[in-house]
Image 1 (cartoon, rainbow, N blue to C red):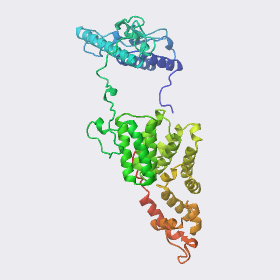
Image 2 (image 1 turned 180 degrees about the vertical axis):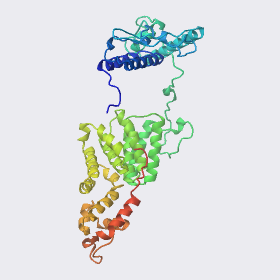
Image 3 (image 1 turned 180 degrees about the horizontal axis):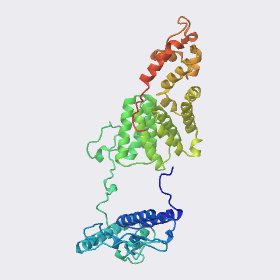
Image 4 (image 1 turned 60 degrees about the vertical axis):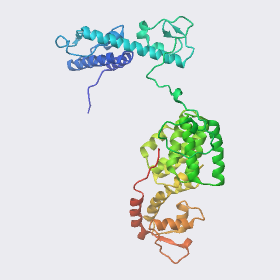
Length: 454
């Protein structure tokens, strides 16, 4: 069943061309042109002449003015003389006519003010372009070196003429914040500094410059290797990141700081700080700064598997290039995604044991959830399950039998058909634990605690 009228191709091409033409005009003229187009199409549809009208010859009167500023008048009915005339449509001719609005001294004054405002905005844009391109040559008010000329063709009559070879003086725009004026350069020489959330403007004497921050990073790496005090090291890294932020430092050193802090956070199961670092790293990589982008792209996919955020994960996978999909860390994460999506727990746990970089630290946060689901699947198919088999199928190393027993106890699945046998010889009684496992799964893993930015 058709959901609406079928428009002829010629009419569709005409509509497209008119919309493209509208982009050259101010918003007020575009609105008037769209209203006129709606009336023309509605009349053609109601009279059944959509197929007979020569659409390529149809012109919108709202766009026929040579100077766009002449059409900038308010849409008002207070000064209109009677209702507007209907669009004239015949098989032989197509002449849409709309009665012009009656103008008065108030409307002329308003139009004059609008023209002056457009001129001021054009000059401001011109000066901003000159600040970006320091040696752009101006000829009769039109920029030779930038894209400003195309935008300002309708306003050329209002520009001041600048002699050839001279650069127009820059006039600062009071509405544009000069961020460079507020950029802080630190003067502190302290290597270590506790992290404090800023409640006022930062003081340069309390901020460490880049040269000192480089020394801080080296000292933090040594302290972490020798002492391993995560709480203190994390506090120092947050302080280091804060000093980089307030000084607007975004370079290769910044990437290195966030990558190191993210890895230390993963090692200590701190997903909050890991995600704070990961979110910033995405921004830095988009700026083209070098870093371990492949590694952290794989981490991001693995973390999305933890959150079971299928919509965002599918979107991310769809944006990956063929080259990115072939990267080892990304390829591993995508295989884990496929294994979870298809319920292939055997492959998932095999991938868990060989996770590259520090991906295993992320998978640790949801591996028990997948083990519970896999155990339910196996319990539905067998009368009993030997612990020797479960140790292999659920992704435990050969010396991790105590961890398997602890997992079964936490999930109320430590019921055996031969409880007096040695641990490695015990068999789980499937019929006795299946319902308990399903209940524990629904209570323990129904919700996922997402911490930080994804």
